[in-house]
Image (cartoon, rainbow, N blue to C red; front, side, top):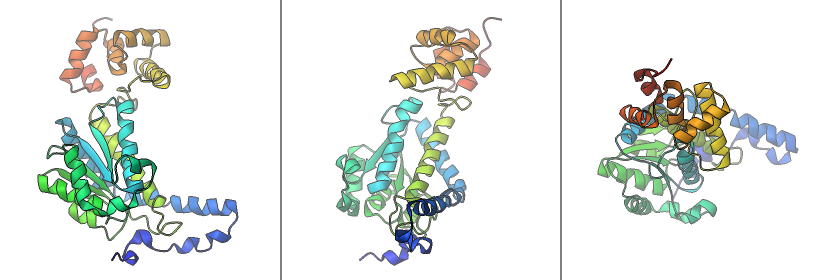
Length: 304
């Protein structure tokens, strides 16, 4: 039997005892005030988040993959972060993946019973050919979800890196993982509704993990997403804007460079800033593991 009284995420929030008696604006003010506490809780975990980023980076730069694993809201948040990496940073879909208890159908409709099966996580990871070269980030607000515990235990068993994100001081997954990120977000506005403050904390942390890792992998120049994939009109326009900003050129020059670079914004910037050919720029980026700034430092402009 689960003793919910021991979980900080399940405690009653005394600030919201009478929320059902308030008018609309007061309800929203109360929710907003509670939400303001979340970044402060996350800030206390920055050292652990940094350790997680460095671990993930080391795995990914040598060909490993990042897997997020969770149930319910936690699983959906992992999937949300994973699916944004290819269009934003030009990664292959396999590099960052999200697994949710109950499979694809659980993304759209709650499959609450699936989270109670720890063996299911091992099955899902084996199906994805998860290996010791990869890293697993288990996400569970309560810190006790059996599906996530099972996944982290399997990661540890095969020698993969294991990271836990939870929001309860009584977190079981924190004790399993190599690195534990545990922002204590406290009692929810609506008792036990961990999609609120706990979910917000998880989203902030996932933002940090993927963004910082992609920066370290050379997917960002300045604060520009130079590996953006131009898969729709908005992203094509964004790539054009990125090139004009980074190379300090006009739209016509940027478009011409993008055409030469087959739509690759990073390469287009290199062409404009150095005057190299597409073949030369491609080789230089490869020699510098895709880091544009390093490539620019090595390559002298070929014209005045």
